[in-house]
Image (cartoon, rainbow, N blue to C red):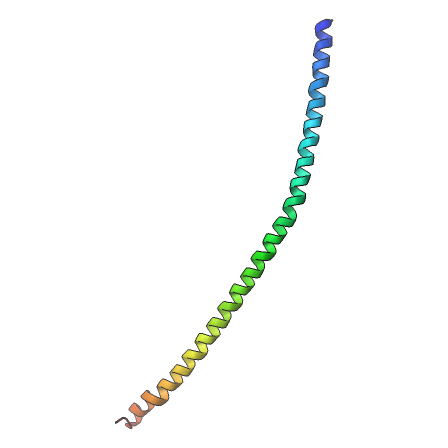
Length: 90
């Protein structure tokens, strides 16, 4: 009888410890999620802004290079190639 009571008491203790442990794990999980979600959102916003800035700078650089190449091509045509074709070079 004494062993049965001891076993029952230990079972109750184990169940209580398991429930408390589960509650503690859930509380820690909730706190971690509450802390991590804003951090993840901030990181996502920062990454999005950085990507937008990089894409904008890349587009501006490509357009500037295209305009400069067009100007250089036009200058080269007028000052070097057309006079060669027309026989106007000195």
